[in-house]
Amino acid sequence: MQGFPSSLVLVGAGKMGAAMLEGWLRAGLSPQAVTVLDPAPSDGVQALSRQHGFALNATHAPERAQAAEVVVLAIKPQMLDQAAASFQSWVGPNTLLVSVLAGKTVANLHARLP
Image (cartoon, rainbow, N blue to C red; front, side):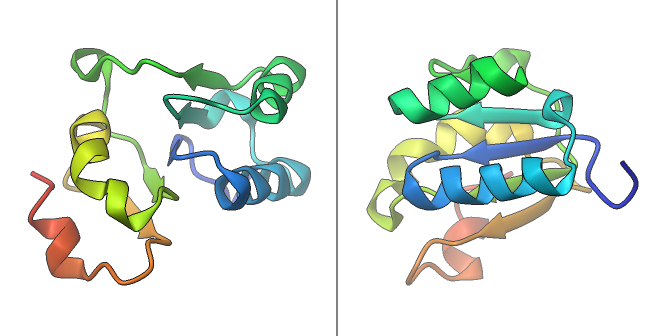
């Protein structure tokens, strides 16, 4: 569908991340464009993945990643340092990075990304 990214990586699929993902899928985002990175996805997110067929990488291998068109950070702010290594390789020079991390600045994100 036009207007949606060709590749979207959602980092964190807790309540907020899962709610955004469900809305995007209902609005027409192709499940084939989606990769979800979450070390402990809920049963609901796992069921959503089975239903729609998007990639659910509970144990992401950074060496296999390619830069995504959009990366959405929906993790808890205090998890940024720990999670950064799992999503750095998905962020390239033309990637749109969207953060819903409360209290984290652009400088905080810039310090953890290439």
